[in-house]
Length: 319
Image (cartoon, rainbow, N blue to C red; front, side, top):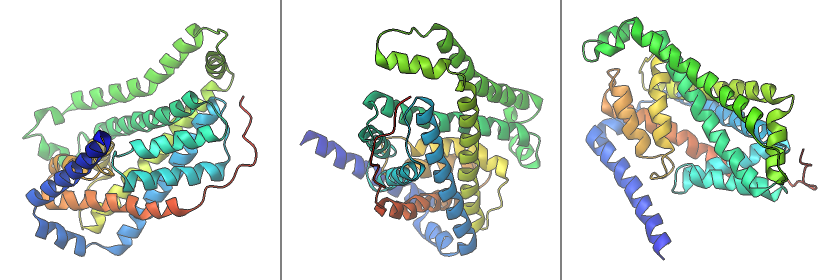
């Protein structure tokens, strides 16, 4: 009973937060912006978002394969979109969909802990490359005209120190996990525990570098496509924002959307959009509408959750 009350309280809080953000932005102005959206840009944004989730599913499958958990490609795609549907329709942001993916992978005959770790590391892989893309984008646009216009309010946004800091953070974000991997490869003990044996073999195997590069490539593609869908949502509302600026804004927008206090990311995502896009001169009603359009992309894709998961007649072998 207590858990059910907390669940309903979370739903109420999420919608209250979304309603508060929309109210502060101006409901009439948000509705007008939504009515005037260009359907061609909306369709392109939806296609880009679908592609982002497709590559996300392939990234998760590749990560699971790294640790010896094999799964058919069609199964991984269908299961991932089932997770997208759960994330969009149930409270808890991405938690419900991630639990569904981990449980589904376990049902294929793989160990539960490793299945859960594959989903957790998949989330971290996306967050990791989102930060890298954000840092590189800031360095790219640090000397642009729009950034110089912001320098009057935030002097730290002007000049080469910002570029150097952003590039240093991007390099650290790329190199950090690889250094951690090298440390684990050297010091992880190979004991009698089957779990440690599998982890040891995965990290010390000859293909660890290839899997690492695959995570970089797939996560970069995912983030670029997701950011492109945000840009398309902005263009649908006649907002011409540079790609690099949207990439920088996408970091807080996407991170806040994953907080488990929200319902499908609604509310927290819009609040982050108002703050991030507002720094580039985009009015609050427009920022809220851009974020809501992005949220609607997820609701449309929830239809993919109606597709049946392909039957796997025999659990794939574990390496």
